[in-house]
Length: 390
Figure (cartoon, rainbow, N blue to C red):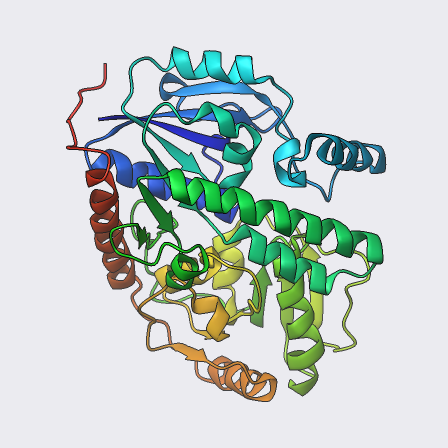
């Protein structure tokens, strides 16, 4: 079976975001199931595809809103309004339908599409009806847009997010209806997308790396707690605000917290132990330097890749229930609570008595379940035909 994996950003090997980590895990699982996978989509500027032999690149785009100029943002908004597309999809309309169709033809004979998330499929929706498809819903995007609208600071921003939610809901409904099968990354998302039947969908348990991370018997502790993330992304920002406003005030003044990643202007903390450290050279080394990891998601859909990584590393954690979306099993050194005071108490207790575990069992469990779900979905497109790549 030959599949065309249509995605906004093709893998470049960097695995710099949760989206890219999820894509790598899904593509690898499709190939383990015997499918030949050709990927098509865009690259980040200056970052070539990691697997050029099996990738058709449409061009280079930078779709990050937080780093775009005001003029570019206004251009995207205007183009979205005129085209009737979502803000997320219109960023990808830097090539025409004819150019995308030509790229599809260059893939050669193939059996079906894997439409990876709503952004690319929504931007070129009319091009994917000639073959059966699988839709991969990384999130329930319209729900996330509604949450973003509720958290928006200005009237215009709130209205734009509400418009985005309305359009996304319609696109997600169409993609799910046309797909032979739908993959989600969390159990709750199946019902939210109206595909809860086992004949229509399955959850993809994910991993963040091909092999379990090496377990270390000892590690150097430089702080009590560490957080890292893309805090300019609204769902992450909502969780960070909850942590800083509701949890941190209940921590001892000498409790040391390091927060890595780009932080939006205006995010501060009066707690003397909070330190914003910006970009760090090595993410795993950074989280390993902390006694305990707070997993602080409170909004959004899909799975929390950060949670999976911490469980694979075997590090102690305190998590909100929302941080465990899409995860059926949690290690014994993870405490779960949504109460801010209890969260703070659990962080201090874990930092005082550090208990690492072997994360390889969690990793193996995830891979086994991922492969089973992929095989189930591929059956909906027909029998898997083993192909030998040249």
